Length: 284
Image (cartoon, rainbow, N blue to C red; front, side, top):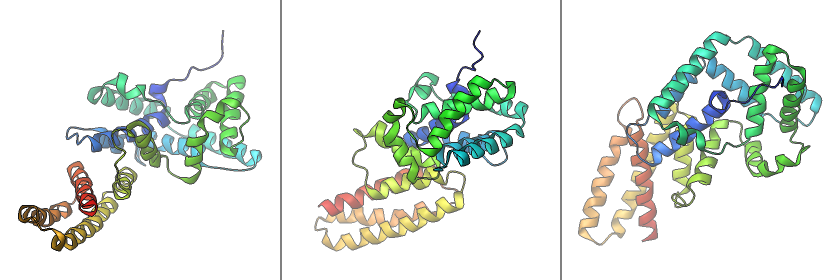
């Protein structure tokens, strides 16, 4: 009988977080007013939840980079030690409720069908955490080897080569949430290949500051002022009277983006459209 713990994609905290950030991007782009991914993420992945604390441990093992295998092993030991202090019962309950919310709001087959970046590493972290409780040395060694290999970025196995592009991107970024943009480009390249630099930056800010409404609000306000200035400067170049009237209306309505204490999805979508308008005016 095998002593190995089977990997459960639906219970892997790192994968659940990545899929939720991906869903947020999809919801924003599709202007889905009933989307719950952002609320789910804020509810279950914060500093006060066991899920949020476990995700931070996943993030450490997927983003840190050491040249020394000795340092990498010390990092794994430290993460395991911290993970042992988490409440197993609370973690299990929170994960159950999280999956319940996902099933309630999304088609589970579609939600979990997507290809996961660094799947092998995430699966190894999951199994290492699970096996650590039952002390299964063979599986623990195999999973530790995969994680240390990833931390040191040494391609010991040829299977890792197929993920080099994604891992190369991850070396430059310190927060797993930034992968949402990479995933967006990969999955929606054909449909959304027109995204401007400003639109891409807005999506990054939205995802990165999903729990920091003040920072996101400040960014929205700053960008709104820039957009208004760009639209106003374009007014003298417009000859068509009807177009000029509509452009004036757009300038006046831009102030609505800065109203309210909380940034709503519709404000993000509206700003995306303002960016598109500025881009069209430049092209004309």
